[in-house]
Image (cartoon, rainbow, N blue to C red; front, side, top):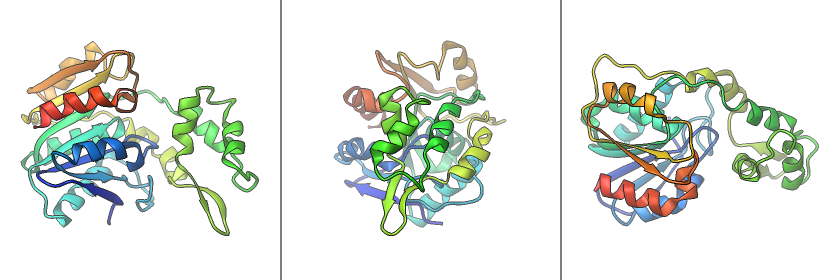
Length: 253
């Protein structure tokens, strides 16, 4: 299975994994900046973006996808950046395949089990009647009662695509993502800790990573470092890209 990806720059490999309902497009600008220092592979994960749709969507599925990608491209000692769902994937990958990893950056996510947090997004997506809408504006208006935040609506709308002869379609595999959502939010466990250098970056205004998560993180990643970007939420790489780039580059270099 070949994931969709874009390459930037040259040098030692750096792989970037987006979050739930995201795509590699969310990381295009930062990938270009990291490409001045590394050979960057910016990936669409399964059931997202332009990557293939499958009938299963678990963390283990995505870890296996990442392993296949690294193997098929002849990569080794990779650096990893993962945001949210992508952060869970790179954590689990590093625990299972530490010999393939050099360092990893985990952006605003912890290895714990999370409560459901996207039901409003699912409701908004279901409210969009793809057989009826003629414009993206109509899709946004259908979402408005469920997603009052403009930025969140725009993030979700990045998944809306128009195909000749068909009309508007969702890029992501919504049926499977909805069914397997609890798999994505599941806890990461391991009997053997990962000793690799790991940077946990959190948004100062985000509640995805809290002080009580640190013991669990350090149990799995005893060499972890913690950094906070003030005045940012969960999408810290989009809200403060300069700060995110600086802290990540300093750690990865």
